[in-house]
Image (spheres, rainbow, N blue to C red):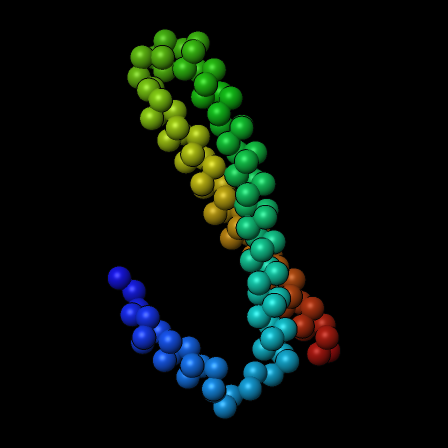
Length: 114
């Protein structure tokens, strides 16, 4: 699926020959947005790695020591517990980091105009 290559090539050529020239402010906004998203991704990966370890240790200990967990939590259940915690932590952290960066940027823009 997707865009056929000949259609895509025509579309790309039309974009290159566009008469609209982006302003330096647009380039700055784009680079700032990329930087903020990279910050969020970096923070999310760090938090997800920590969450994986923090959720893996008690899960694996429980499976070996608690009779109910030993009987009912197979390898798939253990993986779901650990990965679920990691995934949730990743997305929450990325969202908070990007929103905080946007908020900080808004304050800087407001202070610059005042």
